[in-house]
Length: 333
Image (cartoon, rainbow, N blue to C red):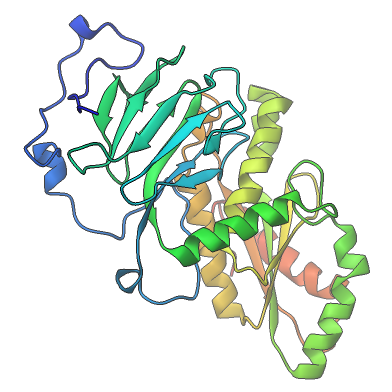
């Protein structure tokens, strides 16, 4: 696969667009060659796990959907190999969307040894960072657009990939809210009391984060309920990526989420809440709907020994109310 410099800006004629700076001998543009090393931010979604430092682990090039209903679908490019992305059931990364061709694009290692992408003659094309391409080098952090689907090339450790797989399993389980894939509110009545009893017996701390999306009614009023539903699905995925496998997230109300964090005190829960808040604020909501932005407010409460569920959640709700009264988009104190 011979690699081309990026060509025309997507949606514009190439004659009207100034060319992107040429690639150097290593395949990187001059300004990109000076970028700092990892860690870098991944589209407002970071995988947060207790693990060895990333520089001690193998980093695997992985293509991940970063917006829309298929957000978090991913495929890892094998060393020296390639992956096929498309609508066909045999593709390595299946994207079931009408704008995606059956074999839309290939990402792999051509003779140069540098990771590259090739359009397989798709109907709706391929773009890298907004520039339409037929063949091009791709680098970690690049935004890849295939038809109407936005993806990103990132470097993940095996631990991070395992966490993403478990997130997908949670979302697909049968006992969840049908829209978001989160636990339903019934969890707080049916399963949570028993779990809390075990925590009490073992002397384990547990904290709750109450999340309320800021001005969510305006999202539905401005963009429609279909966009509102897509936002809720994305919110659920962002939260599940940011929390541990042992943590639980419940869709408590229409736009309210409740996160339970075992073996976590108030300070630790506030750190998690702040991380989720930043991920919401930095997520590229424009790819869901033009002009869309989203923030949330958070209330945190560490459970007291033997405290009833209702009283514990009520205390978190009081802190959430203080966050909203203080201006929203913050973790209440």
